[in-house]
Length: 168
Image (cartoon, rainbow, N blue to C red; front, side, top):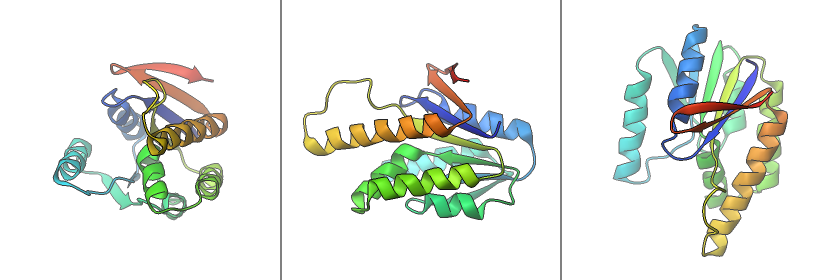
């Protein structure tokens, strides 16, 4: 595995699947977290993810500078990024250029010389959102996932905890 994009809906098993794949490799594992505890519920979700990971993981928090965190993890044996969708949301909330941020991310992943697992939500399977911001987010997430899938060596979609290999 050089790069794998793991897609799925909420609670589809993406994080657990990615974690098992990285842990099976052994060695120095880096978990790059993009979530920010903006409320109590999100803080609880982050705490659960930390408990699920257990020991043996180095955690980097990168809500905005995900490319920098990937580059800083070059000495690891494997990297897990959780998740691209939250990172995109953070980029949008900061009013940053999405094309520039996306291109910087793609460049960092392409130059990464260690196995990297990237988690993203597939948000385009539901109804069309009723407001412009939500529609823009859904569209940007879809375009980000397409670019990442094109670049990734492997793409896996999870539904109900079951992985379906989309690529190769």
